[in-house]
Length: 127
Image 1 (tube, rainbow, N blue to C red):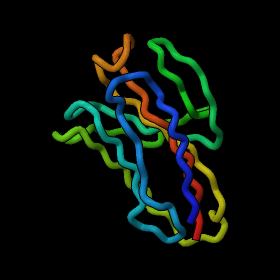
Image 2: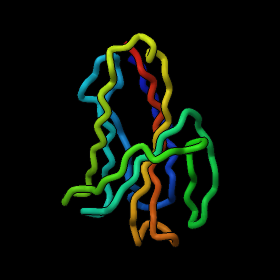
Image 3: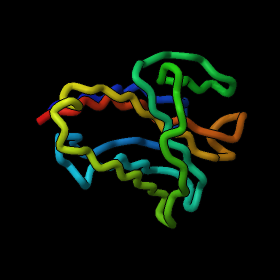
């Protein structure tokens, strides 16, 4: 399985929220994307798309996904961590599929807009 990360940060901050993931291999029923370093219980959105981008936004943040859609919504736990689970089916048609993800967090101290964006990840489904 291949997985590569786009380590650019979505917003400048001394301790920005961070996104990381498990390995998205075929048949991985436990695949997840984890958002960390957020305020406890903060509302969160996981954005996904098929291409990368670099779109400057108000507050100094950068959208790193082309034509994003809301993939999941939730809230961080009491430790500032949110986990989004997406089982990867055992379908050879998915091999090599790339998905770009980035998370948004309601964070009053994150930027002048009251939100923060994470780093972006490029996920590639493999064997």
